[in-house]
Length: 386
Image (tube, rainbow, N blue to C red; front, side, top):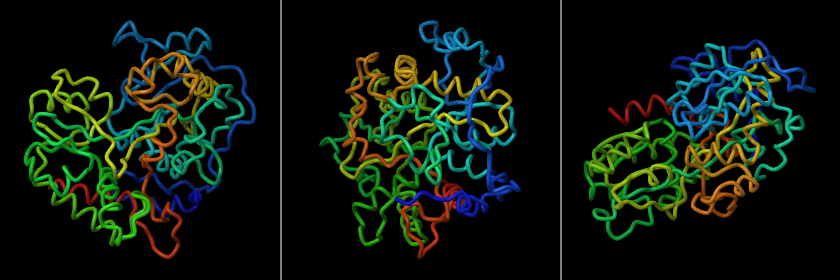
């Protein structure tokens, strides 16, 4: 699979300026920030922007605190801010003031294209070598072979269903697409433009004549087909969710009976009448990356955090708290649930299409067509939801 160049990233995302992505392609330099060649003394503080549950200091639950150990070991005092969506994180990074960001694949390329993050010299990180190879140097966390961060945790967007209402047990995404009318009002879907890729995964298997080989590389015809499928689904969707706590509640009350989910949600539903499956078509998913802001005021503390959060014991604690597979086999020595998350299972991981920012240069390697970029995905998502 061809890795997009920095120039192509700029071109592919420039159109998003009309939406919330105005910084993409506005920097005057194509070179971006250079990776550090060596590290110096830590600066005494580090500001981190991350998904909820990624930077726990014991204030939410005294049993979960991996920040204090970092502060004691490095002298870098941590301030952190959680964000709810990748679009929100992009806007916050545009505003500046953060040294480190934990980014999913639907955000990483936007940050790189906007020169908002710097390349990372992984040779300066003791714990990088132990990270699963299938998470390194991928199209969502590297450009032209240059790494832009450290993989954290990963997981699949699974299909969850109410075992009382959805029978027989589903093995396909057809229950939320072609057969969604069977569960009208009880279907739930992830509330993000990146969900268009879920429809594309389904179409890859069920409409092969479309020629989709990567759900994040859609030409106009392929994109139109995915959007049309989602507009058909819309009439049967009871709720779009982005807050996982709300999806837990919806399945517990019975308002939702089938839809896309995360393993942590299944683990948290208390009613005992739900199950999850990775459908036969495969699934989208996430592989989150710790990245360093290009204007970081504390780059040494930032590098220290990237190395610390990749430490097997720390990574085990952090990814278990969030509900995802850890980034290394060594981390499983500190967890008893790695099998449930299929940690390190390359065959399972190969069925996951990890979130990747759609850009006009097709990330599947095609050069004879332009693909639909994220700005158009965003517009289409607004139309889909109505």
